[in-house]
Length: 150
Image: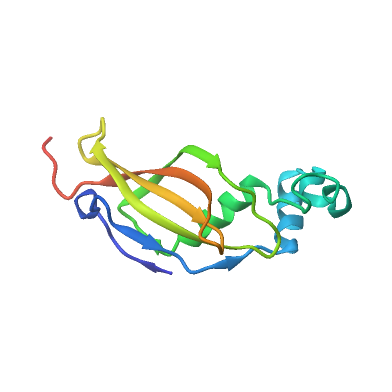
């Protein structure tokens, strides 16, 4: 991890970055359940899951989101900050032993109500080891402009 200044003007529409993979473990399930209080049997009871159509434990959607977003945090940009996430969708289940990777694409840039800032949208796609899309969302950033009219 390192510091890299990137202003609004530096973000290029269509630019993509991709993470390395990370395998989701049973420990991830247990730690996330402890953090969130979500001990639903879908995540924690392997015997019960065998009786369900999906046949095995499924990751909390928020676990996949949290780990995936964390994987993209490779640079500290003092010129921008996160405003939040929109359009979060859990597309396919993630299981213990699945390996996820993340592709981030700059999908939109627009003005902010603050003349010294601009909105940047990063479209986030998380894939499993089979190349199947498992989660999508849009990350909204506010980035400082290099130059602005007052």
